[in-house]
Image (tube, rainbow, N blue to C red; front, side, top):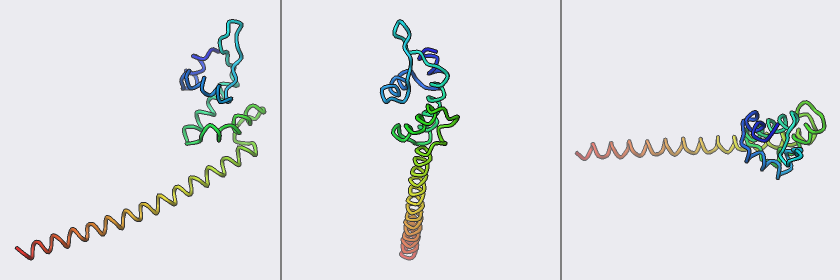
Length: 129
């Protein structure tokens, strides 16, 4: 298939496919006239890339998943290097969640303090009238 068909089938753009190619993630063959030609295996690779990008992986993180697919595995998630990336990414997400919980708690405390101060100010104003 040509680049336009791959882009359409994978739900991406031809520009993105060319970028993935410059990054070494996608490997098209070339026709006699120089057109990029992709097989079904490249469609699987591009879908894997898009799926991982959608959940926040960077292209460097995606490389082991692509290599795993290229090694003939049915999933890019089954190889040891991919599992290591998944573990690291999960730890990053867990740390981010912990930071967000701390921020939420701080905001709750600030809001409660602000409301209490506002109520005090309103009571003082009522008493002076």
